[in-house]
Image (tube, rainbow, N blue to C red; front, top):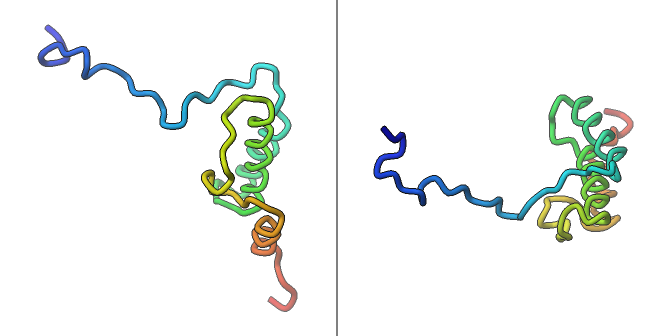
Length: 99
């Protein structure tokens, strides 16, 4: 007895990810950036902290530079695209005096 009523192969066909594959970093080109990002995420207990997002940007930049992922605009990845935006993100996490 088949677990798939009608035994349709079409229903069992996997769908590829929207943005394509995400190859493994077999040569360890981006291991340092990945470890820094994961350490940050662990430190902030999984919160979407702006300083961790900057580390994520460095990691993704490394992957793009090493052709481990397709290039994409930072805005499509939800990350700051220039130094001004990066400075704005950093200011959000920097405590101000008197608070």
